[in-house]
Image (cartoon, rainbow, N blue to C red; front, side):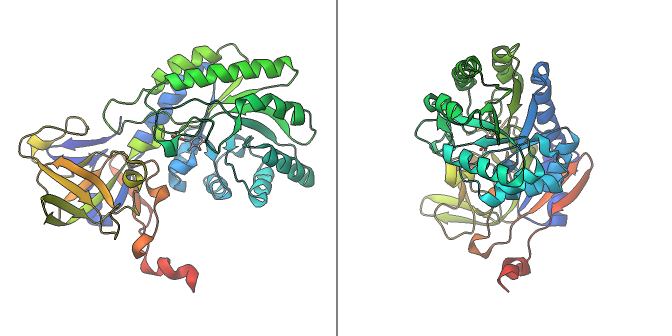
Length: 425
Ligand SMILES: *Cc1c(COP(=O)(O)O)cnc(C)c1O
């Protein structure tokens, strides 16, 4: 699932000792593995190859332009949700015809920029947005393609905050209303409404919701085609699982084994928008232990990373496996899970320095003995990690490092104090 492995008690990112990177770049630092990105993307490409899909990596999961450049080289398109993400994709040399743009609140400025860049599809989230796109397309003399985002009312069985395909969320239009949107706007001359988009939400652990949603949506496609509308593409979004815990997420092949047969022979172009399933396992967040502290009956390990660096545990209640970067060989983890039962472990909370009770990475977690100065690795931090980071508490954002085999390179410098106030001068 990734290329972060222990060798003789030392954690390696591919062929580079993580201690060596921390010594050079300091902590906290995101360390990405290029081979892991490659492997996950190529597994998806291979699993769906029969349908020659467009695979549009979801930029909001991980948006460093040096990583986007590598994904461009590997043939990836991109799923964006803002003008800023379009800018990043173009800076990285991405092919704009392989860009799909979702988001319930696209501004006029963002729409015009995307029209000028001639992106692949606008994923339309409401009638009001479509009317605005029609107006701006006419003004700009462009004829963009659009997909209607429909809400299939399927529960991906994930956290409420990452559920986006249920009726009561703000995303897309109800599937019952979709036919009406086509009859109102399907024949207009300014925007070619010729595709359907769905996105169920993030990090589900089963394939079943996809089957259910695609079956619903295919009925809609059939009906629209019978009514004379040309539906050339179906964008089934992202949300495919990632192995935060070893072996818990369905593989790309597992998803494809259900999805490909549903779509084969239907003369419809498939678009996928994977984010976490490509990026999550591709990074660790490396942090140093500042203090070990006993409070009441609890023991705390206070590290130099904080919720401003990785907010998923307090935001989503997300689990991240955490382990020291150097351990006695008997403590080398054979797999990553919630409670590894090894002798001599201590139950501790791993917390950051920020002044919030929500600033934690793990609660009541069994870990091998940790002391001041030890490096800890927070695993599966590559998706919604750095991209959700902030400067809260006057903290400089972490550095990002990309490892490729025996080589590593800083792909984003650690911010400086001057950076913190630069825009306030
Ligand atoms: C966030 C998002 C994705 C990616 O979701 P993952 O869970 O990272 O795969 C795909 N499509 C849309 C529209 C999104 O908002």
